[in-house]
Length: 416
Image 1: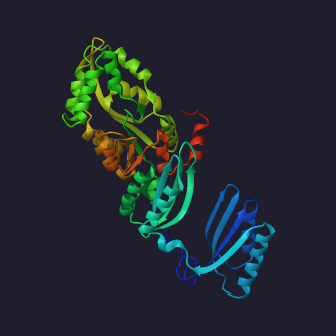
Image 2: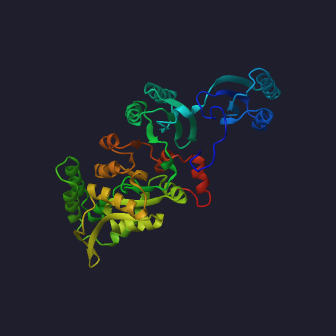
């Protein structure tokens, strides 16, 4: 019986049995209309079943592979089928190969992962390194396809029989050596479920740091930068450093927030990423150590669902140098991710966090997929994967979305 209660097709060993004789038919040569139809029309007159099909065209060159159950008569039917397929190949100037074997790829169904490689450029040595490390783990590459050709080249490898943890470790080392970005993710059905994408803002969604832009208005940029430096050296925790920097902004007109907001520049690809993934039903959140007075209007402009940030106190049209409410720090970002996931009804395994700094580490660790975007080395080392290109929409490739799909989604609304 099948899982839906219906009777499975009868057969001596079943179509997926590793012991069932099969034929692998391959046509290769110049692509042309009608090849696929002709091949299957030729097979239609024989007692065979289709178990698998793969077809790829690269710069006008076709490879079409079809896995069939072997016909019951090993002599007469085999000979006739080979003859008719040979005619199809000869008439179209294609090369035909037919290989006998047993079973299909069902035995390798376990340990399936998707390896995504981003390169700008993607060099042969990098592809060789990825394939070599897959082989080192005893896994097999079942399919390879290009999902983007610009502004970066992105390639997906479907891998079976893999130990994901070991493969991820090996490929992280290769990513650094080959100057490419590599992500290893489970190929399970959850990939097609709704996801929540949680993004940092400063130096991730937007270029630059909001507090430094405000400090320029206050004429205290150097003092603010000095406090930031102490925090980066571990002399201050995030909350202490934030409160000290905000105190330096006392007296700045609240209109400076409007000016900073207007001056913000989105990271290239940011609007495209949000628009494309929203069109697929994804939910979005901005989680920032910055300020609600800047983050909330930005979220409204991008149609972001959730936000969490700090709030500057304003009295009589000026900043007081104080914050209102609890500070959104490193732990607070991870807490916000979990809260928004619960509100959206999305499992943590289906969350994606994107950030660049130490303040994002807890959030990256909590998410189902943590992406370090143009991040500091320590953040890259801790995240599931890193994106080192300047284009935020490259993250979409890690989610299996192709460049063609991104462009199709952008046609009606324009691009970044």
